Length: 119
Figure 1 (cartoon, one colour):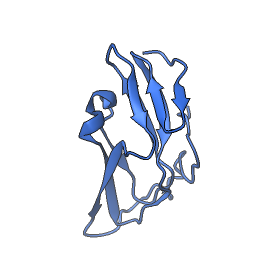
Figure 2 (tube, rainbow, N blue to C red):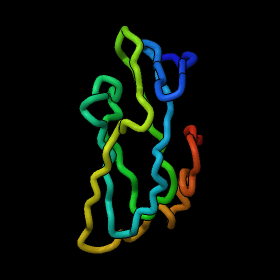
Figure 3 (cartoon, rainbow, N blue to C red):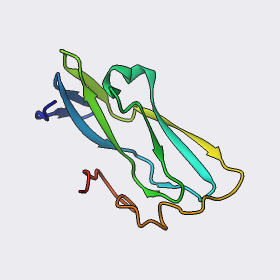
Figure 4 (cartoon, one colour):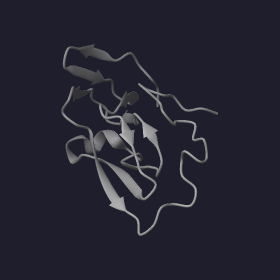
């Protein structure tokens, strides 16, 4: 999979075939220690999620969530601004986690904007 130049105009972004784009959530999350959250790709954009259709936002995490949009189809894909690519499901645990993302000094903690992977 390659990264191509995206074509973005006003409220539409076109992801070329067989490529990917990174985006970020509009929301800035502050997940409490007793909450687990699961990010689910919305069915409207299911062909674009590939293997990353679900992910977790860990307890104690704070920041924007970076989303990977993978267009594995042979056609360009249109992404519309503010339409919503994903939804987040929040689950309350019976007790707070023992070690939170904050405690571990998570590498994506307090991220703003799009954050690429750290190695």
